[in-house]
Image 1 (cartoon, helix red, strand yellow):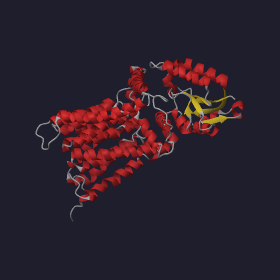
Image 2: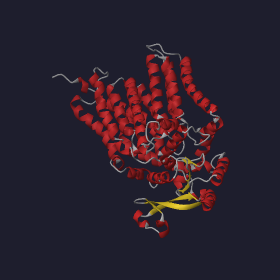
Image 3: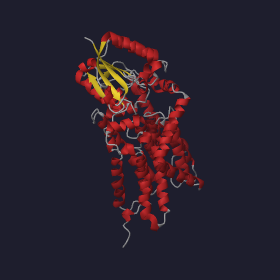
Image 4: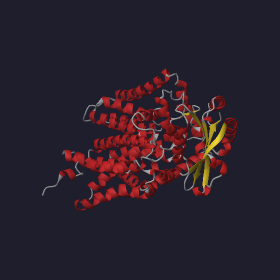
Length: 544
C-alpha cells in the first residue's frame, strides 16, 4: 500500500489540499484548549486601564489630554475598536485578544513556511505558539500591550522576508508600516523591529541574487517611508486634536522618569523571578529552540544566525523597565519559530522506523510538559482562583463586585475617584474617573508634571466632589510604598471627612472576600470568615 501523503509532514511543499488543512485540525483545538479557561479571569489593572481608555475614546475624549497615561496610543485604540463588538467585561476583552492573537499564530505559520520551505517547520512553529503564547510565565492570556504588539512584529518580519525572496518593493513598504505599528503599540518593540531592519540591510546587500531585488538605498527608503507614514499620521491626529505636547510628554518624557522610579535592585529582583519562572515552565520550547539555532550557526547555516538574531533582539526588548513577566511575551514569536525549526529538523533526522513514536513524543515534550509544569494555572476552573494564583491579593476579582455595587447606585454620568490604581473598576462600572489620572503614580513625585497633576486633582475633589471615593490601602495598587504616599492620602482623607461618609467595606481575605454595608458596618461583622484579612477597601459616598 502506498503512503498516504497528506500525513507526511516531512515534505517540503504542500502537494495537496489535505496537507494544508490537516495541521489546523490539531493547532486550532490546542489553541482553544490552552485559553478557554481564561476567558472570564478578572482583568488586571493594565487591562482595566486600556478598557477604560477605550471607553473614553468612544465618548469622544482626547487621549493624553482628557485622560493621561504613559503608554503608546495604539493599544488604547485597539480596545476602543474591540468595545464596538464585545461587551465591557473580562470575557469580551479576552475573546477579542484570543481572536487577535490567533492572527499572530497564522502570520507566524506563514513566516515559518516562507523561511524554512518546509510544511513541518510551519506546523511545529504554530503548534508551539498555540501553547507558549498562553504561558503564565508571560501572562499570555492577558490583553496587554505586549501581546498586541506581536502581530505587527511578526508581519513586519514576514513582509521583509517576502520582499527579499520575491524582490517585491511593496513588501518593504508594508514591513515598515507594520514595524511602526508595533512600536506605537509598545515602545520595546523597537528592538525586534531593529532586527527586521538589520535583516533587510544584510539581505539586500547580499551578492549572487537569483532574482532582482531593490537596491539597499531604495529598499531602505521604502522601509522607512512606510514607518514614517504611520508616525506622521499618528502625530497629525494629536496635532489636530490640540494634544501634541501632551502626546509627546506622556509617551516619551513621563516614561523616562517612570523607569527611574525603580531601583536597580528592585529591577534585578523582578527580572530574576520572571526569568526563573520562564525557564522552569517552558524549558522544552526554549531548550530545543536554542540548541537547534546554535547547532545550525556552528554549521555556518544562515538559518541559525537568523534565529539567534531574532531571539536575541526580542529578549533585549523584554529587559527595559522592571522586567515583569508579561514583558517576556515579546520573545514568543522568536521562541516558537526557533522551536518549530528545531523540532522539524530533529524529526527529519529521526530514523524512519522510530518516527511513529518520535512525533507524539515531540508533541508531548513541547505541549504537555509546559502545561504540566503550570498545572495549577491550566487546570484551575475558577477564574477568580486563577487571578489569585498569578496576582496574589491584588483586588482584581473584588473590582468586579465593587463596580457592580457602584453602577447600581449611580447614574451613567457619575464620577468616581480611586485612592490607588484600579481602573478596571471604572471600566466594569462604565463610570468616569474624577480626574484625568486613573493611575496613582500620575500624582506622585516621579515626573516633572506631577505638581500640575496634583493641582488638577485637588481642584476636582474639592470643587466638584465625585459620587464615590474608593480607598485601596494596598501598596501594589498605589505603585509606591504606603509611607511615601501618606501626605497625599492624608489630604484626600481630609476631603473625605468633609464631604463623605463610609457606605461599604470590601474585606479582602486570604480565603475569600466579601462586602459589608448598611447596619452591619455599625453593628460589627465577623472577619474570620475571610480566613484572615489582607486589607480592607473602603467605599465613601458623597454627602448631600
